[in-house]
Image (tube, rainbow, N blue to C red):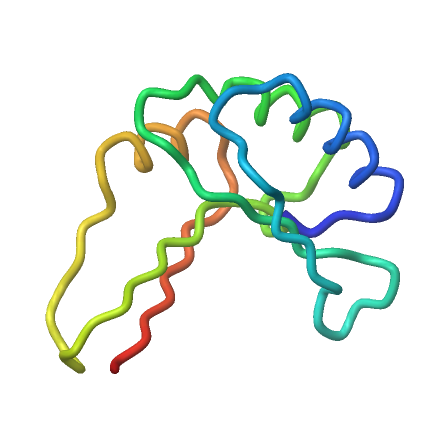
Length: 104
């Protein structure tokens, strides 16, 4: 998610009591002063319905939040399929699906 200070404060208050949200990764958003890129690891079997409520309450644009699938591999080609729970979450919440891969 790409959030302002106010939205980040609201998110911190919401996730405090939610299961399946460990430490938030919070980094300054590249090229956007006073905005932050926020992330956390998803866990299968956790109800993340609060994300949709947060997105709707904050009127976030579709391109400012979504799912990032990150892969580390020893191959420079191939394919990957996101787990079903990730696809279901993306459908329920909206936003984008981004993929990142690192070849080691």
